[in-house]
Length: 398
Image 1: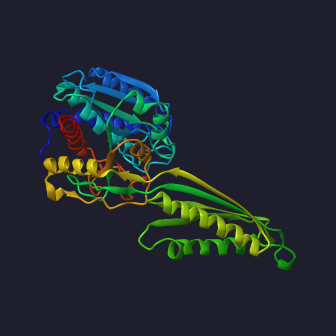
Image 2 (image 1 turned 135 degrees about the vertical axis):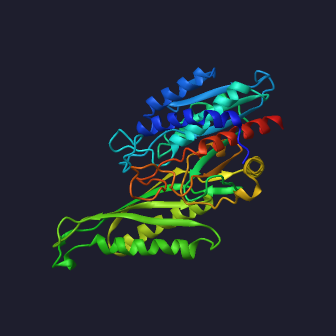
Image 3 (image 1 turned 90 degrees about the horizontal axis):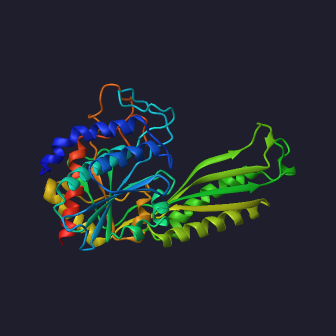
């Protein structure tokens, strides 16, 4: 493993910043303290900043030895927000705020980019400009979309943009990157079935919405097995069914909610259309009424071929070819997708290990994402920062 010596030497200090962020988690668009910390560090290292993009976002601008005169630029992105969940860990840097936790490693993502920023600002051994994107509200708020709306790519003219996420279960020292779709679109649906309530002992006098809901839930899976091509990927998960208040009363209304995930927009179009048709016609067949709502949240995260291949080459130069593996697509979603819709680039995974790095006082659960016993592995900081630095240097040297 070929790490940059100066980054290794500064890693302990950056790890302390990471733990400070972990202890003070902030939710979507509330990352004021975190943004203050990030901005303060960047300014301390002589990096000009722009604040307030996407509400609480921070952009750092590192011009190379030519002062950025060549006009070339690359964007490196880290997310800053936490999750609305209670932490089970009790070690010294555990969350100090009830119901808020860095359970996805965004504290670590911020730390890795800060470590890279410190090195790049100190050496500036490149031509062009490196834009450091510290993004708010990845966890459902669409912070990437909001930064773009605020003029991220117009104000900071980068050619490409790259992102990175820690991946529990993958050994430390390993990267994963692939071309094409690597994370799914995220979408929500809500179906309100209106029947006619009555006494449960006299079902013939009403229209029971519960069996209507049961038929819909079963029929939705035929979209996956019979409507889309078998080689395409889609997930339809009904996660909530709400109805009724008493055991002897047929309810008037039943509500179904859930999520849909796909890797392509055409498949998503098909799923939404067929779900709406099934919902309306099933309700009509039982004499009930139906309201179908479908909300598209994050689009699929799709890596462009040239940029993913370039990132793989950089990774291989750091950890060796055997430690850079194909990125298995996941049905999880990521709002970096919006940036990849606007610019070429690639989103990769960096191994977070199996959880043995966690200190005494960690929760009893596994060290997986969105788990109350999760903690970012600080051993990743020098490796992730080295990748960011080498990626920027080599791209701008092309």
